[in-house]
Length: 268
Image 1 (cartoon, helix red, strand yellow):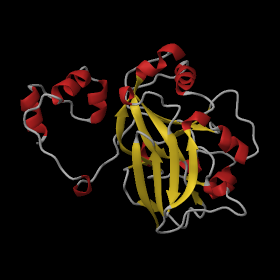
Image 2 (tube, helix red, strand yellow):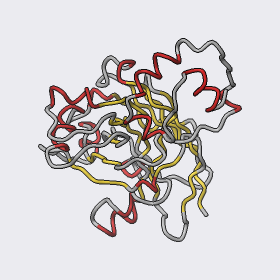
Image 3 (tube, one colour):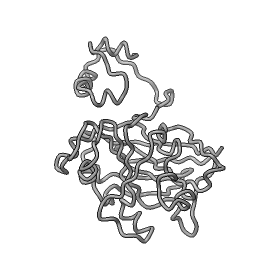
């Protein structure tokens, strides 16, 4: 079934891209209509190339030091207010894409497995009690980080903003399918070795409060991504010495009830 088939089956004109689809009045109607489609065609997942579910987000908002165990491995105290930074949309990569890293620019590449929130509707000055009403759903996010660049700059932006430094996917699980986003396992593997094994229960600033604080001065738009921070086990804090990613490494991040992304690191 292609786009034209779907439009005929639903008897509507579909939006041109995913951001238009999310922000349109079609979303709930289409979800209901899809359940009634008479013509169905199935494909094996391995026969498809999955793209990033939000390939061109308006904003990618990220939280630093937002897991108690990640703060503990750095011997730091979690901040009273969320620590926010932004990645550019050019950092987005697909859930199973190879990640190309310039070897003359980055030598200390690290992973950060994270739960990401996708905003579903326009909002500003959103109260915490209403915040989850603005969430479309959840996806898996890898906040790839060049630790050597971060160390030089004494801040995060450049070292986290390279092209493809935000693999995401494999899909968006809608909010109604995740009863409790604060009790999900997060496991990161590198070449099948478990590096991160934690839970969203260790999140410091919860999603509703983060949305409330962000939206006090910033309009949140459909398709915005909020990456909620990473737990302990990142490579830079491994003992007795750091374990940075190497050419050919396979990084796999699984979040319970959401899915798994898997990316191969290619140093060029």
